[in-house]
Length: 231
Image (cartoon, rainbow, N blue to C red; front, side):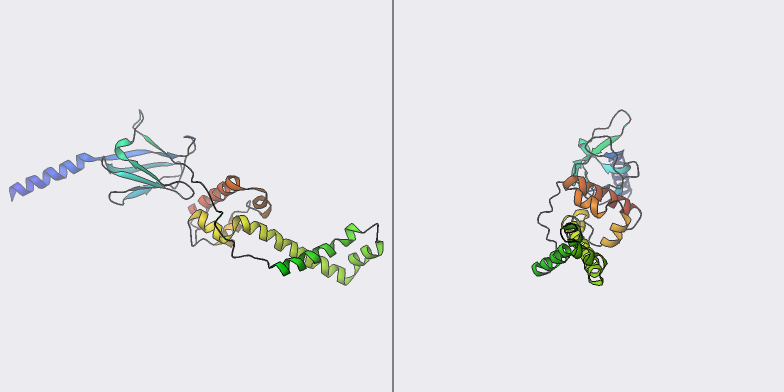
């Protein structure tokens, strides 16, 4: 029994000695931009932590462990603890690389305008602009379209159709399906997210593409998630 106690004590002492506390920060590829809320998981036991607002973290590991760094929109990184190189202050730096964003395979299923609907909508929009196009060539038509009840109705309907066309263009770049795939958050409320990220206006979405657009979406998503608004 005494021998077993000694062996147990030696194993416990060895395990404590083998463990090491890693302190450091998570940054983007430029090595200067801190990344908050990055998950850092010990692959060996599933324990982990999350970087704070300044990208800093502390984690207990063993030399044989492997760390998994995960963050939406970034490539998942695997790094062996033995390969970490602390600086003079004993701190390590984990550099995350952005994942290639390819959403070409996403089908916009939530918003579609049928061909015959599009033809009718374009016809109404064209009619609403007669007063602008034919003001000098046909002043009677222009006056009729501007002041008649029918003219006002056509203009009101045309405005609705123009807004629908605008929304169709927006959905091609940032539909609920695209947002879920981009963030990896299947529970995200699209309407609530758009309302929260007020600067992601229809104009901004339509006038930006690729990384310029999706990096801003992810920037807002990080703030959205930090406030606990992911659902």
